[in-house]
Amino acid sequence: MIISNTAVQSLGAVEATAAHASAADAVETAAVAEFRAALKTTPRLSAHVPPVLTSGFVYSVTTIAKDAAHGGQRTVAVCDTWERAADIIRANEGDVWETTYHFAVIESTELNVLYGGFGERTQWWFCWDAAPDGDLMNGSYVPCESPSLFDRVQGFGIG
Image 1: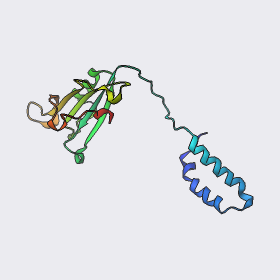
Image 2: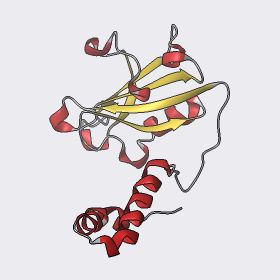
Image 3: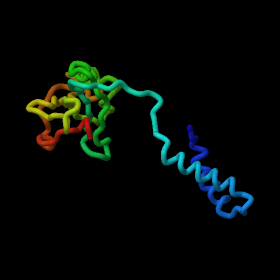
Image 4: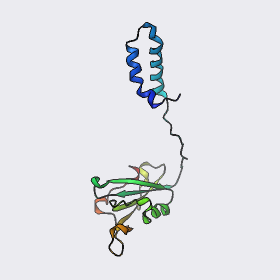
């Protein structure tokens, strides 16, 4: 059974009418009960079912601003190879810098392992650097050490 958003929104109006219905409106009351039951049992499916990865690693790309007011942090990509993740950062693909995300981190996450199986080297950090002429707007991400604030933080890409 497919239930539209309009039908869900109109449930309240239908229930109000049914509450004041006479015995002759018992059919409408039954329809409301059937609708409620359908809402509780209808699975929420997406239009596309993604493939299931069963082993290996994924590599998340998370960009980090100086504070929440300037964007906080966001994971912009999850890649199947470290090289693809690094390409996104190095090329500033899709303008992931957006003038505010001064740090980027790639994290490896092992599939099907609790907390992603964090190991010895699971993060690779990059920071935004101005162009050789000092122009910040034409800079690029370059490898850097983890900022001290994030020395003991893991799991950006998995929340």
